[in-house]
Length: 262
Image (cartoon, rainbow, N blue to C red):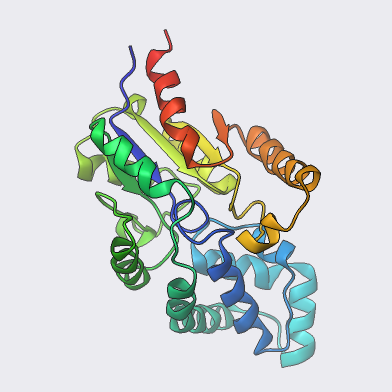
């Protein structure tokens, strides 16, 4: 029988920040300072990768690069990437605090997992300074993890590379990928887990892939909610997720299924 010893979580959009709004709001703000109004689709397309790489990808996209040249008179370059990243880091703290509420069922589910002896790790595309800030706030709201790893700790090799998962395993003393599950809200979370050889679970409600705030989601009709969920479900399935859940209330049952599989 397979034993799950550790669950490795993403943060924003997965356990806090319903809809992953902090990053979207921050990107829109820093790009608008240069006269570029980003769309949600442009921001969400690469969500989950290292922030500086995400900024570079947005800046190099066809529409944005043309607008950047029109507004600044120069082609987008690495200096612009660094400046945007600096502004992102400077402004993200207030957004992180604003959207730091734990998602539904998260606190109870983490308690249940710990009672079963399961360790809780995490990976993130946030910087170390931001994570120190976020974990302190989250702890006051009842959400804690045994460790968090970002790309700074793996020589810049963040998602979708597997190294942040391996570093979690090292820190928590987990010896086999067969005893680990990765849970996240983006396609890049799923790719990270697949590349590490661990079981993967995509979370639909409040995910970056859905891109809706809690208020926006709750305002939908039941039919529209189901339609929005199906679109995200299909994305996760296409990416190769082993399991897909609406919310964290289902996580213990999925773990039981995995452990009881012959």
